[in-house]
Amino acid sequence: MSDKFQVVVIGGGPGGYVCSIRLAQLGYKTACIDSRSTLGGTCLNVGCIPSKSLLNLSEKFYSTKKFSEEGIEIGSVKLNLEKMMKNKDKSVSTLTKGVEFLLKKNKVTYIKGHASFKSGTKILVKDNNNKEKIIETEKTVICTGSESTSLQKVNFDEKKIISSTGALSLKSVPKKMVIIGGGYIGLEMGSVWSRLGSEIYVVEFLDHITPGMDREISKEFLKILQKQGIKFYLESKVENVAKTSKGMTVKYSNKEGKKIDIECDVVLVAIGRKPNTEKLNLGKIGIELDKNKKIKVDKKYQTNVKNIFAIGDVIEGPMLAHKAEDEGIAVAEIIDGQAGHVNYNVIPGVVYTSPEVATVGKTEEQLKKEQINYKIGKFSLTANSRAKTINETEGFVKILADSKTDKVLGVHMISSHAGELIAEMALAMEFGASSEDIARTCHAHPTFSEALKESALAVDKRAIHS
Ligand SMILES: Cc1cc2nc3c(=O)[nH]c(=O)nc-3n(C[C@H](O)[C@H](O)[C@H](O)COP(=O)(O)OP(=O)(O)OC[C@H]3O[C@@H](n4cnc5c(N)ncnc54)[C@H](O)[C@@H]3O)c2cc1C
Image (cartoon, rainbow, N blue to C red):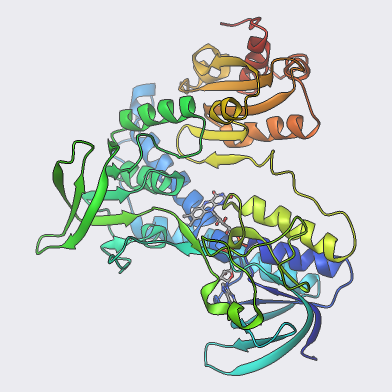
């Protein structure tokens, strides 16, 4: 096969593989280059998929232990961590193979290796055996994603000082784990290991967890996690992480400036992710980066070099798989001369803890900052009959609607199945729904979705069940 393509996509994660498939559907001779041994990027290999697998399995383990409280006696419940990890690995390998199949089915050429720019139209690919070849292309889409950031002078060994990648593959359950950072990745991994038996301590620099989330939801979420046994040190700054003869010590200073040591077995650093822009030789072709080293693009995902585009974690915006996927489709259609578009006002976000947390649209804090007048409708899950029936009454739904037009501007919720429920709200927002529209939509009984309808009714202070 010739090494000349119409479009080369660098990165086979959710942004890159989806973009490659859409380009191929549109008739472009496309290659997708990825340096990992399997396709699917961070999301499938060391992100969304393995974390959700472990969240599901650990939740089963934890809730099974509590069955007797509901009158189901099943004897002792034991953890087989090795088997649990194998189960997780199986989900990952099935899905990564699935992506390879999809590329093949759509006639995308999959090239395994590390890509860097030789020029604006020539890409050097180095495979695992350091064998090099040059690929020629008319256009390139960079979807190289991101990787975990560490603290200064703290290097991941993925055994004692771990990133989320290490947290997905620990060989035994740590007695004590300190998590630096109270964002969603740290909290999801903290939930997994807490359910499996670890004592979890979260040290967070800010005075709240899950930065960017609606503050009322974030406060309630904190309370729920504390009730589950996770300990939080907010407004605390980690000064040092050190290996000792016994294990690890994390030194942090609290808001009064007092320095405190926590001894633990494992430290998970979950302070954020940085874009993979360093090893692409972008300087050679003059591609501009922003102050966070993300690739600068315009509304059409075009860089300052006109035949080179970028999407996903490597550009501005929420670092989420579905955002990368939607951009993948949009940029392919833009390359084809169509009107590809992503509505950044309606990108849902989900934290897959128990209960789940899901949000879409503006938070109250954003609306205040933007001086938009809004009404609030809230409904507690304690008044939802399905939640009561299955003893899952934690949380609430909150709808924010424009004071004048009643248009839904944001929906935030903590609830079982919130990650699924949020899709209805995203769809409603895409169609420009008012809270009245949601309130007048018939919702099946008894379901958690009735809490959406009730909170929509509550916007006009006419909820029935509260
Ligand atoms: C623990 C964890 C849990 C997460 N959970 C969720 C979740 O539940 N939901 C959600 O939406 N998001 C989640 N995310 C975030 C999600 O994984 C990312 O937002 C998403 O993978 C970004 O997609 P991408 O295509 O931009 O990049 P990536 O998925 O990072 O893919 C980029 C690919 O490019 C490859 N690459 C990089 N440089 C080169 C090069 N020079 N040459 C060739 N290949 C290269 C990389 O190896 C990688 O395979 C999670 C992330 C983590 C770490």
